[in-house]
Image (cartoon, rainbow, N blue to C red; front, side, top):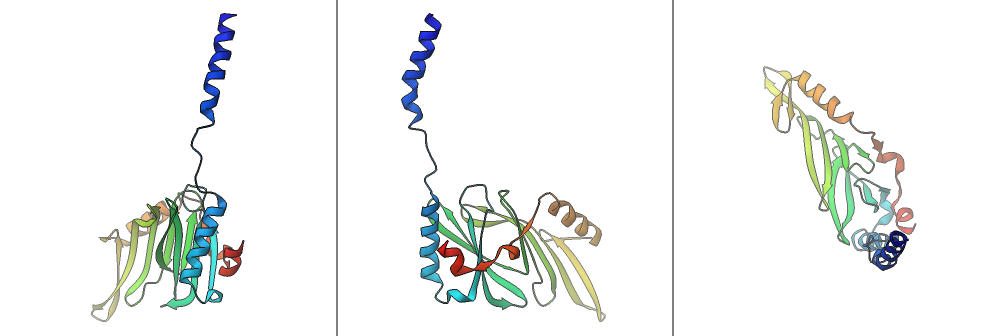
Length: 194
């Protein structure tokens, strides 16, 4: 009987402590307001943009992916808007294709970067509201070899063989189930008003 009374007393004494457990400070309304304020201050021609709410990192607040209708050498100029400590943080991406691994904090960007750079790939993550590149890979065209086009392959700014380049890209990209953000795009105004 003493054991039962001790257990009951322990529960009664500790029960009020459970009400003081920390809860996530950001609510859906908070992040929506932050995104609405950011867009209204930074995008005057809202009709020229598409956007998607996507879950890149591991928290419960989606990132806002904004794609402009302007392009640079066939690449899209995009912005990732995220919230860190109830403040809006942004970083820009230039890409032809942007994939992300939901809730795994991984973004995979692929682009044709311009003159003499044939392909640029990178996998990055969001750290403290900014982009942190985990690795990049480049195929570089060098036209100076006796009128022959020579491709140089780089991983993390180190020259590698074609075989090593292809194996590395395949190995590091197959770790995740990627989603194409293009399939989720809607008019920016529609995203902000929801």
